[in-house]
Amino acid sequence: EIISMFDSIQRMTHKVRTAFGDSRRTCGGSISKNNWKLPPQGVLQGNGYGPAIWSILSSCIFHALNRKGHCNTIKAAIRKLLIELSGFAYVDDTDLLQIEHAVEDVVCYMQKKLDAWNDVISATGGIL
Image 1: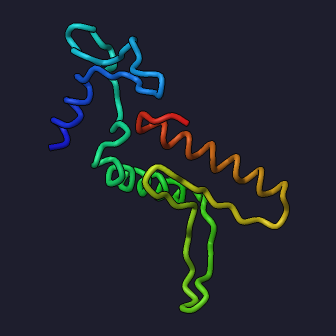
Image 2 (image 1 turned 120 degrees about the vertical axis):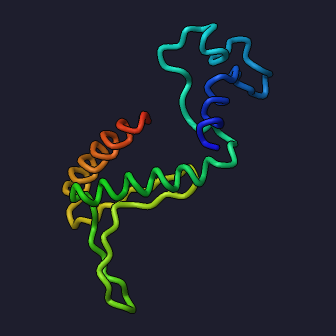
């Protein structure tokens, strides 16, 4: 159940592990003990549900970008269908697309799209 998964993540004591060993400092742990105003958030790296959760979340973000007009219309070569596409994502990698003729236009529109992405992802609790 998702509620119990996030509850467990929020109550975990998190450490950073590197080639030099585990960190001494931690974050998280008992919510009541630490009196968290905002407990640790997120799915965590290595969580088996992570790719599925990101797939759902990124699909909603792309849909919002498309509704705001931050998409490119591409014509499929064989079926001649028009496809609206603002980008694509796989696991933890996201690519935003912008098609323009002049480099200055690409930079301008891409910045607007990136700002819109940041606005939408901020609403989910994420950050760039």
